[in-house]
Image 1 (cartoon, rainbow, N blue to C red):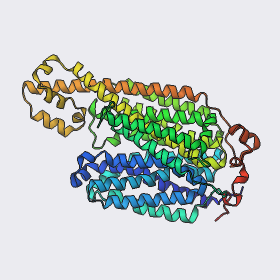
Image 2 (image 1 turned 45 degrees about the vertical axis):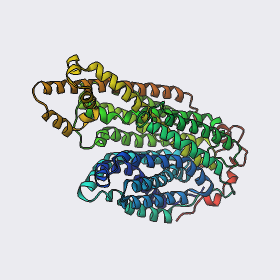
Image 3 (image 1 turned 90 degrees about the vertical axis):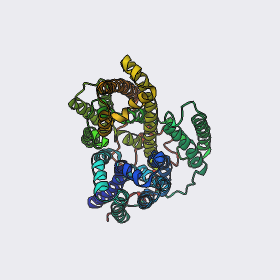
Image 4 (image 1 turned 30 degrees about the vertical axis):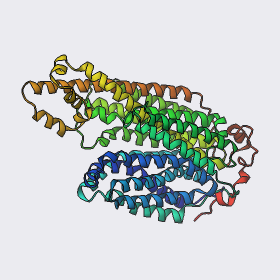
Length: 551
């Protein structure tokens, strides 16, 4: 197969990475600037919606845009995603109210979801499975790098420029990415006329949005047993049933149900869903442990995760290179899951007397495991299906990981809230319960107070004599209770990762192909009974489009 020149390929990769950097940096930068934005625009009660709107549109759009790119080519959707993201960024920077900012953040999320669903698929277009590992490993490292530099960059922009530049900074980077990709990126597409699964799109949106809202609101804004949460989950369940029915009869389904007959896809989807629950649900609470339990001061909680992200950057890059050299993935995926499990177990053993050095060690181990697994499952499923399903399987893996992470954060957050109150009351000395009024006690046991050194110092200065001693006892009780509650979260995540490891043992290994088109034997392995179908046939794809000439 004719290949693009090496120079042109590198230019395309650079353009893709610029687009990925836009979406990856956005969340950490915006998070740093939010206190300033709230102070100027008001609307503290809408704070969470700035992130929720982005999450809803980005998660929902991933599988839809992945499928559409299979039908009409990756180039218009990836570049279109960058343009939509830039438009959302420009409007967010110009927002005059919190409501406007939330709407424009949703537009940003739509662009980000479109970029996420196509970035790894474009790598699949450019390189055969055996060569994708090294590039997808490097791109996985982009997310780690953004997590390291994002908080610092966001703080610098907010303090030295204006919070609006947190959004405007995306524009020059986006313009550069669009210019590069317009010139260098070939439009690899299927030339067979296809139809759009409108019913599948509608039912998928109706299923995902209320489900995510239920898990975001549950245990925070509404009780899990409230009519609102039960109603959202019931509506989501009904919509999922309608989605399955629609996909069974669709000519070009958004998520072909036949994919689940492929054991490699099914196992990979289950593993990324479970690791999403365990990993991202638990990672969300590491800053809470570091600041709330061991009392480490941090001007930005995102920086606490730097050791883990550095470990992820290193292992993601090395694992990608190793996969490409060996052409194998099963043993590497097991090593990655084992390292993640070990890291999570080490986290579960931490307590009030844990040193910063031990926390850093544990996060590095966790990051090393996370980085190893990041590129593997995308390559695994891409290698197991015919070329014309490249976009849909790539986006599906990202979709399952994102859904798992959202559910994990919600469930573990609810678990923390319920356990913390009980553990605090059990840890408080009897004399404290007798001397402190109940309403004041509820205020004191809020762990967020102890993550803010200024708030703690202010409260301490207001107290003297016996009350100062009581305050010290309350602080110790809250830290002990928080450590015990977080121990339960990290231990639950460890159990989930052990389950993921067990499921991964069933992962079938097909040697990574050295070309885009599988041999008849490989096609039969990855698509039993489907190797000769039009969808699986290489002739269903225009070779003139798949094989771009050198620039």
